[in-house]
Structure formats: C-alpha cells, structure tokens
Image (cartoon, rainbow, N blue to C red; front, side, top):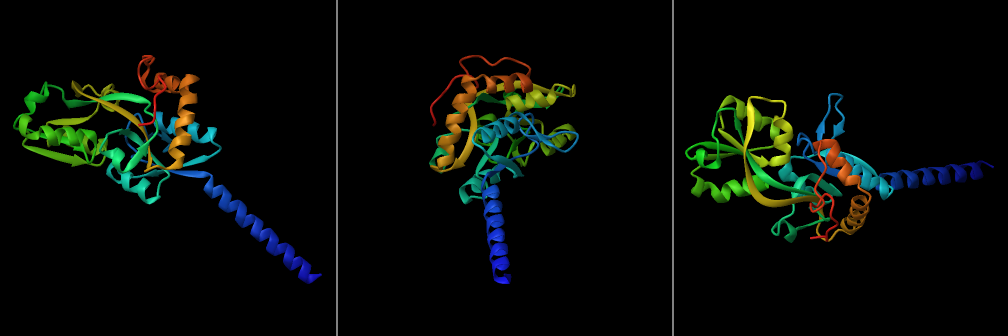
Length: 260
C-alpha cells in the first residue's frame, strides 16, 4: 500500500511539473523599451499600457498565449530576440533592410517619420541646429539619420539616450538644443507641455512592426493574426484609442501587407 501511495505521489508531482512547464511555455517574454509613449509606458498605477501593449496582448490571446513584458533599453532589444531572452520585441521598431539581415519582422502596422522637438522659442528647423547639440535614442532610426546627416547639418555633437524621459530633461535644461525621434511619440508627449514643440517632420518613410529572431516560426504566426486584426478593424480601433484619429485606409495600420 505504501509503495502504491509513493507511486501516486510521484505521478502527481510529475504531472504538476509538466503543467508548470506547459504554462511557462505559453507565456511570451516580450522585450519593450518602457517609457516610449504612447507605445509602451507605465500609467499612474504602474501598469504597462500603450498601443503596442494592447496589440501584443491581443495577438497573444488569439494564439492562446499570455504575455510577460520585460523592460529592456531599445538598443538591447535586438540581442534579446537573437539570444532567445525575448520571444519578440516591440517599441515602435522600424523595419530596415539592415535589420532584416539579422532579425525578422511581421508585417508593419504603423507608418511614421522622424521629427525635431525643441523648447518653445528654440530652433525652428533642422537647418537651425548647425553648431548645436542634438539628442537621439541609442541605436534608433533617429540616431542613424542624425549620424548620416551630422556633417551636412553641422551638429556640434550627437548625444545618445536610453529613452524619452532623460532626453526631455536635458532638452528642458538646455544641455541639448533639439531632440530627433519618432514623430507619433513626440506629438503625443508634447500635447500637454506648452514649453515643448515639434517643429519639423523629417520624412523617412518608416514602418513599425514586431521583431523576432531571424526566421523564427513565431513571426509567421503573428503575421497571420495581424492580417485578421486588420481585416476586423481592431488595429484601426487601437489607433483611434491612442491617437484620437481614424487611420487612413492606405496606411499599414489598415492595409494588409506582406511580411518584409
């Protein structure tokens, strides 16, 4: 009898372990640069919220998975998906040919450009930044653009930041005279800050998507769900929720597109 009880206990423990492993396997580790409004940031309660937080949770739910958000500086998101520390990454990540050499993306869901943000009364254009210090996010497309244009534009220095908040502190304190970053995030950020102003759109023709390790099977699965969410108007609804406007039908927020 004792032997039978031991066998039952061992079997129960084995079953519990299997269930625990399965539960863990069903939870995506999602890398995100928290503080990137309105894509992923913390609300007054400390909860992670934002356009891409809503989107990744909806995608995961459609595939029967849960989500655990892991706060990672933007530049670290690439190594996180490549090493397997994250199953995927979000943070208004632009699809580029260079990035596609080492990572994969699902179809895009947002069209964007870069922008120049200044303190009210500061430089009125990129041309006015000649001889001045500009800020960018490390490893971002704003960083790439500013680096490529540095000699032509005549920047004195390019300072690199890990997120919006520290850059805004330095902009307000006069340590940088302009901040170059994604226009939707900055338009959202400055709308209730009269001392700051987005003075220029820098056209770069960018599109955002979720990022995965190169040729990850999950990328294709997520891509199929994004197609369904576009067809159902779900992503357009998120656009209205977070930006207060209906997206145009020709944008990647609405139009179904191929994986890059």
